[in-house]
Image (cartoon, rainbow, N blue to C red; front, side, top):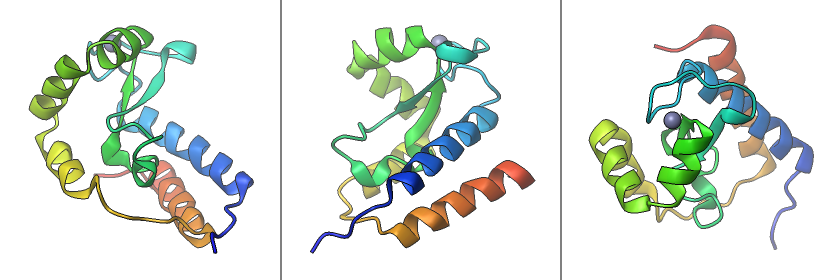
Length: 127
Ligand SMILES: [Zn+2]
């Protein structure tokens, strides 16, 4: 039987992940390197979260982008987007290739652990 995931946990996790990615990427678009804020500050999934649910909250699968790069380059021209990612993020690319077909069913415990992990990274930084 499928476990029921807490909507609240998902909401909190999504918020904390977004905050973390913005901080990690210094509030700049990873593609054009311009500063981003507000609605122009978009969290982009390298592997779509609809298809690869287990990568939705994986920081290796997430980069910060401006609206233009996210929609015009990443979504309209995924081949260019993919080449770019492979070149700029070889370590992340390799990791994602390794894990994209993992079968992971999140539990509420997993969600809580992820919330804690990202909250810690937000509060204490990272190397
Ligand atoms: Zn951009």
